[in-house]
Image 1 (cartoon, rainbow, N blue to C red):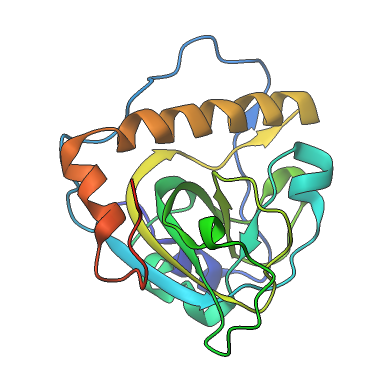
Image 2 (cartoon, rainbow, N blue to C red; image 1 turned 180 degrees about the horizontal axis):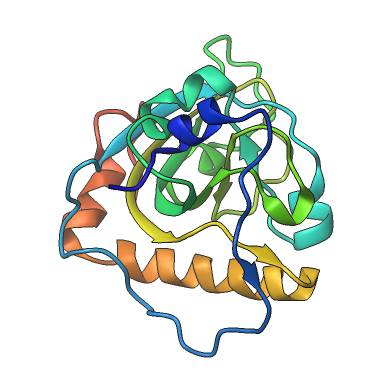
Length: 199
């Protein structure tokens, strides 16, 4: 059995080596995972959104929200590093003072990177979630909830930013296709989410 992300992190002070992706992959499956989630999925995460490195939106056109270290234990202790898919939601503050529009608080598909982001040489294990929705403002400090439903691919290093962007765009498409199945769609209405999607 492969080591979990937490086991890898505990074994060394240095990030593990990741395979180098030297060429654009022409063939990747358009749908991943079985017809319905299988253990260890679903994995439910929650925590306040932290400021990350600011690279996702600027460098890659894929803004991400970082969960604090203590919030990723439910997945890092049962899953390996890599890219995952599921649903996520940003919870509006209870005091009503929110920068978010009402549509921003729905449940949306997401992709998540669990690992060290070897292209950027991160020094610690992180979980970075990209919610597939156009937000008009940031939501640092607000609670984010996620239900992780499946695994897309291993964590890789890249010879260029363009190769990384190409894989990220494929990850998004694979996530949407994989979630577009009845046994996955029902998790958009999971009790873990405070507000239900109107879809």
